[in-house]
Amino acid sequence: MATEGIELEEEERHRATLVRVGELAPGGEPCVELCPPPCAIVLFGASGDLAARKLMPSFYNLRKSGLLPENFFVIGASRQKLDDESYRNAMEAAIRSNAQYDEKAWSDFRKRLFYRTLVPDARPYEDIKEALADREKEFKTGGNRIFYLATPPAAYPGIIEALGAAGLSEEKQGWSRIVIEKPYGRDSASAHQLNEVVLRNFREDQVYRIDHYLGKDTVQNIVMFRFANAIFEPIWNRRYIDHVQITVAETMGIEKRAAYYEQAGVLRDMFQNHMLQVLALVAMEPPSVYEANLVRDERVKILRALRPLPLESLSESLVIGQYVEGEAGSEWAPGYREEVGVSKDSTVPTYAAMKLFIDNWRWQDVPFYLRSGKRMAAKFSQVYIQFKRVPHLMFKGTLDAAGIMPNALVLKIQPDEKVQMLFHVKNPGSRVSLREVVMDFSYTEGYRGVKLDAYDRVLLDCMIGDKTLFIRRDGVRYSWEFLTPALDLLEKGGPGRKRPELFIYRAGSPGPTEADKFIQKDGRRWQND
Image 1 (cartoon, rainbow, N blue to C red):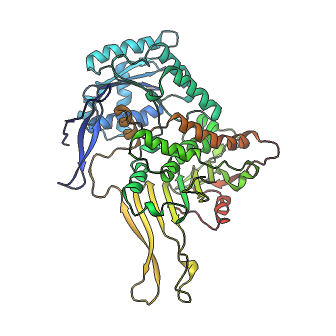
Image 2: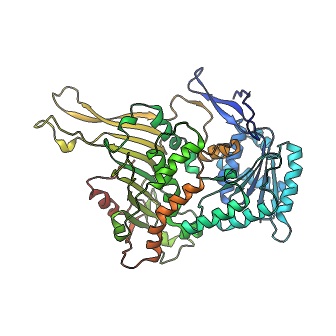
Image 3: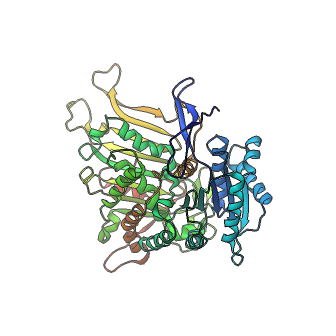
């Protein structure tokens, strides 16, 4: 792969370079990425599942693709007792399983990996501070540091306070940043408390609250598609759009994450972050400039404008479900309550369908339907935008009005990365006969070069200092303020308010039948993959 190092202007405390990563067609327009400046990564939870399956393979892929600088290294830190060599061996096994292993690329990458055991009574953060100082001299990273929290959320406050106490949040030479994984709190109060801890030790501009879902190319394409094509803006509003559906359907279960999922459930796991952030991208107003804070301003405005869910009649806006045993694919899958570590009488929802509204000029009274679930019939994520029906059917007596479906725009996020447009044309040969056709565009069609997955993208952006895809503290606040009242009612109840019933659905099915009735009562239906 050819790399062209084109220096950019010196920015505050860092310098990036442009790297050619591909082209639209052989000999065509080049595609470039920003390569970050020299930096050090301290990865807390370095021996955990997230580090092995996602983070370390992403760092490896970025380096292999020429998108990490020569002056770069990682210090893994966790309570497991390992030395540098044993940690490198463990990460080699992880990369063989989760990335495209290349011996030459791994040989280059492994010499950049180091490890420190966190022993509570042995000044572990002073040890990390000393290790950073030594390696920074060797790799000449200029004091640029990223602290990544890939630990259980309960460990966040202690790590953040210890980093602050050790002076590791200070910026003496380069920059210092902290990356915090979801879930960011479990309700409004806990998210506020975590923010207080974070901001006692780091400035807001140093904080990167990560939602890897926003790193998916097809999620980012929502904004590009909307605002780079003038034909859609005049019809992207309440006058022409009937409703919007956002679906994230998963075929897998909780995958040995019972301890987390029993505390979270689908609303905390998917809706508070992924689903509401995608909704904000679909519904946001155009910023004056595509710049991180301006884009995030517009996303936050949407979260602030969400109409509160009606707690007195919550079942009219929310359907929840939990999977029981069934045939998923070609295998028999256990029910949620049979999963290892799950309570036998658990009422944690693994499926939810929600109807919500945005109270602003563009979207007033346009329903947004969100749904997500585990162990469903198919794995797919998409945004389905249905336009209103034709106002008058001029072909009376020759065509059945009910048979003419409305036009729709489908933004497929995964596994098929596509943009589809559904419309009607005349059938060949007949005098008056219509058929529905699909204009289908594959997102990667015509592209030759490096493809970044979600974690590749957000890690790269963090090192560059681009916060467009990260969540600001007010974004966290408003998403929790919207969702917390419903969570409280579901989990604690309330006087004079009826909790929505927890419906069951078979593993390998499209979800509870009650969710179909939920949208059908509005004269609509779910659009599946």
